[in-house]
Length: 119
View 1 (tube, rainbow, N blue to C red):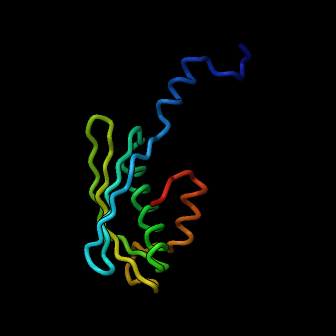
View 2 (cartoon, rainbow, N blue to C red):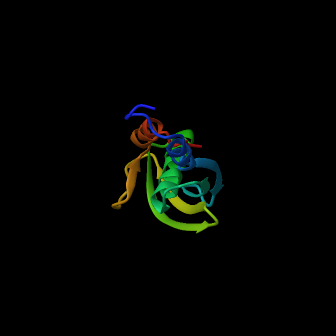
């Protein structure tokens, strides 16, 4: 073994922390109000599962023919290593008012670059 090569147990430990994106459930609550329920295994924390929900919301926004979304709320829970997020977004063709808005095209591209799946 060379000084730069990790020991085999280090490889196993690193593989355990590769997140598993286990699905998105999308519920249309109103014409422009959408609920996203996502599930992850091996997330590093609440930020990971929240980002997964945001990526799903951005892709869904584009699918519906809109360009922007605004975050309303996200509830996150973890049980037995399984992380869940229950997030609500409004979607719109124009940039909505508010501080927590997303440009759907930019967000979907960033999600693709960072390996976070979308809807």
